[in-house]
Image 1 (cartoon, rainbow, N blue to C red):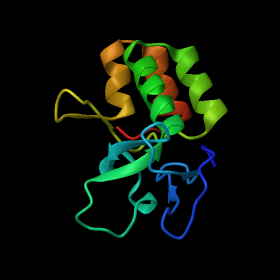
Image 2: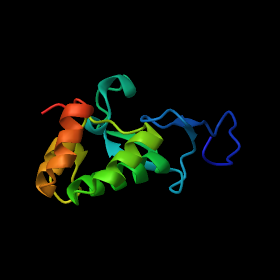
Image 3: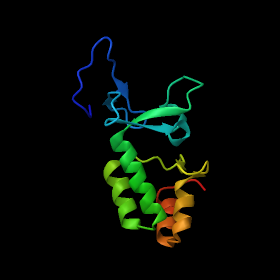
Image 4: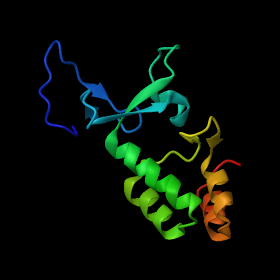
Length: 128
């Protein structure tokens, strides 16, 4: 549990759709992602749902990982991936300012760091 909220019959807990931790509905505990940012097996059966709830930890980690890929920071990307084990390499990052999806491989190409690209493709088997 990421927060110290007391849950009752009327104040139900939620689960982060990325890592599964229990979260409350407060802004400080939860963020919203487009559901295409997580694997299909992770979200609920609600077909009309376009956004899913994730904990702030997953949101921060994903943003830092995406930033490290775009900036070509191989060591930072490796550290985030290996220490958290909570990053999905087969789902896109959604740019807030556009409707484009950036998969990790695309973000590493933008950076121009060949070692980072090789790490994603050869070591992590990241899909092209």
